[in-house]
Amino acid sequence: MENNRTENTNRKKIAVLFGGCSTEYQVSLQSAHAVISNIDTDCYELFMIGIAAANGQWYLYRGNIDDIPEDRWLSEQNCTPVWVSTDKTVHGICFRDSGSIHTIPLDAAFPILHGKNGEDGTVQGLLELAGIPVIGCGLLSSAVGMDKELAHRIVSAAGIPTAATVTVTRPYSAEEVMRCARRLGYPLFIKPVRAGSSFGITRVCEERDLLPAVENAFAHDSEVVMEEEIRGFEVGCAVLGNETLTIGEVDEIELSEGFFNYEEKYTLKTSSIHVPARIPYAKADEIRHAAAVIYRALKCRDFARIDMFLTPEGKIYFNEVNTIPGFTAHSRYPGMMKAAGIDFPELIRRLIEMGVGR
Image (cartoon, rainbow, N blue to C red; front, side, top):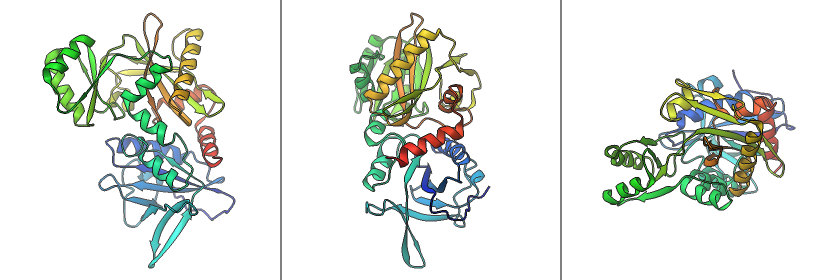
């Protein structure tokens, strides 16, 4: 499917960013393909911008969108190097052609980038500096949302319970780490402070596995958090909007074993997602209220997915916020919105309109 269209000056110019220098590069390709496939090109002029994993170079991609999820998009034939103009009067991207510099003004940019160097505020800050409206969370909420420790502090201050945690930085004392783990209790989780899609996370049941798990997490970030395990199951809320919020159906993760790691999130081999969650309506309403409080406290914008735990006693705990949740076929955010009556094309339309209206 080619995206070559006769230019219509009435269409808003929208850039979709995909790829990136992140361990979640492949996830971004899958999500971006789904988003691009559901953009109404009768209303919007689409510019696909791929970010190479190897060196971070940005390219304007004009090839077949079905080559994106297969990671066949990066070719000299279909890619033109581009960069963001920091001249706010341009509010767009630049490229060279026949020795001259050309510009493409943009009405909004939609980053479909997961993990570091994309979901953590770096790209959002660059786009905001260039005067390009960003679809989704801005610099502040993106950076805070990626930092598990800071997000937990803010959400706790807003009155939502969070798991007990201890942050570890290098150099660290193995004895002190083990003492902290005993205080938190086993099993517990070892997580990179800033990483997504459950990369670098280990559920530790015995002390002998603690230090290897800490080192594994350090391979993904310079800070590591030790977190008590909350007994219960994970529930989530898809939140859409700004002044007025639309909250999708609450979903529930059913696990047969372990935790909802990277493989389970994108293959569902041994786990199931129930939408709506198999809980009483009153409890679902309480979870939606908590999601709205968290969304506001973290200053989220346009959309985010709020993940929580529900204990057997009915207590709600904050887990994490995903400021650019997955948009793949298995992804929870579009699934929760669909269950609430908002299909994928309509969801993408609403997101774009919030961005271009900024």
